Amino acid sequence: MRPPMLRELPDGVSPGGRFATWSAPAPRYVVCDVDGTLVGSSAGASEAVVRAVRAAQARGIAVGVATGRMRAATRALRAQLNIDGPHIHFDGAAVHHEHGVLDSRPLQLDDAAALLDLVRGVADAYVEFYTADTYVVSAHDERAAAHWQMLGQQPAAVAHDAGDLAGHVWLKATIVTFDQGRRRRERLAKAVAALGLRAGASTSPRTPDLAYLNVTDPGVDKGWGVVRAASYLGVELTRVMAVGDAPNDLPMLTRAGTAVAMGQAARDVRDTAHLVVEDIDHDGAATALRAAATWNDQDVPGTL
Image (cartoon, rainbow, N blue to C red; front, side, top):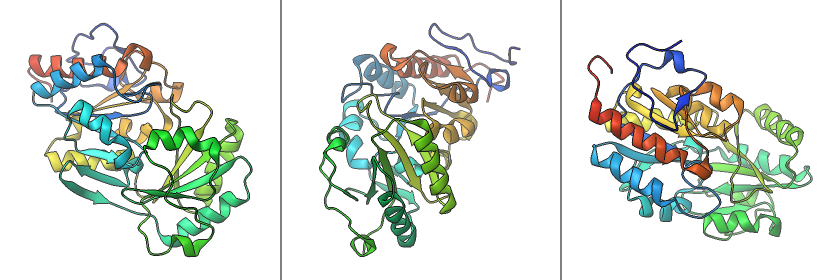
């Protein structure tokens, strides 16, 4: 079924699972996941993505990132793309623009301590705790070296017990697993949920041997971040385009007026999206950004 007021879909864009509900608004804010969306196996975005961001901004579209990473770990990418945001970091636990923090919701110290205890009993996993600009780990495990390189800095310290976590504001924790087994991640996610916290699964093309569970306050996720960012801009959620590929992107895809899944995304992500673009190796994010720019040029009467 084709939705009313449908814009012509450009090459590289196909219907997603919620295509029939898409009202085809012209986006005024495009927010993109980082790993697997803006960035593949290399550290920076492709030239096609850079050009597409530039084209979108030329139409007055705000562009930001939404990621589980800390702010420092996206600094080079944000500079490469020359984007002001708003940006969503720590899976939604912090929302900011280039001049300061707009909103944040950290973990409670007791929750962080409970996570530390939880992971100590799990083989082939450890946990990281993040402040705004740095992080500590439960063990200095060299199997995570590629991940540390991606973050752009080494761990600041090893947290041996709850006392080592005191006196800091922890915005997010990440459980890193060295075993890609899905059942292990599912058991960990259930254990995190039993603590009253939220766990969002994620991966990165740059660290194919690792898997991540981003743990945050239960009231935040990328969807919460999108709501806060759109409010700051004065943009209705119907005018937000969100682009992602992983389970932790689902909350922002359900909030956005135009939800776009990358071609390599799992079935549940593609089913949640209005549209699907090419995979990361074929610059699907650039296709989505170019479509947003084109639709703003057209601005079809009668759409939101």
